[in-house]
Each structure stands twice: as C-alpha cells, then as structure tokens.
Length: 125
Image (cartoon, rainbow, N blue to C red; front, top):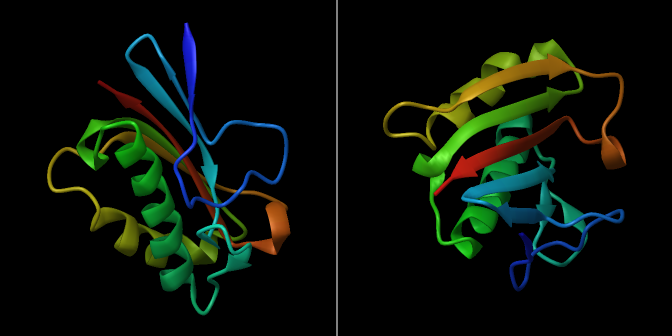
C-alpha cells in the first residue's frame, strides 16, 4: 500500500507526481529543486543557496513523513555541471550528523526550470 505525502505550504509539483510516497516502511522522495514554498520562485543566488534550499525542501518532505535526515538511506544528486560538485558537497554534508546515506552524484545535460541541482532520496522508518 502506498500513501502520498504532500506537505502544506510546499511547492506544487511541476508535473504529475507525488512529492513523496510512503510504502512499506520506505519513503521515496521525489527530486527536489530550489523552489521556495508555494511561491513558485527559485532560490538561485549561488550554488550554495540553491543547494541549501533543495536540502530544506527534502527536510520538509521528511518532516511531513515524521522523519529526519538521519532516516535517509539513499540519495541521488543531479547537477548541471561537475564544477558544482565541491560546493554542493559542502552544503549537503552539513545536513548529516552521522553516517550519511549512500548516494551518487552525476552531471546531466539539463534540469527542470534551468536549475543547477536536484536531489532525490529514499528514507527508511
């Protein structure tokens, strides 16, 4: 059985998908970009601020599921360029106190709305 997780005040999905799905003890977090709440605005002043907003959006989904960053077991990081790798890592790492999740980080040709970073995840209850 699956249950969608849609936090109040979160950015509306840009396509037909659920922001997160809770299924059999796992929570699948759709890729998050730097959308600010339900305003539709992007936070892109710098790659650091953009990544922080992405991580905060993931945190909002986790919180709506009754979880925290410590419950993440897998993340995927998509970047517009590997030139962002060090800055993204610097911000990303601050969200994990102990044992960060498994992950991959890849550069892709394009991301929604021309953003530089998108991160998805899987959490475990």
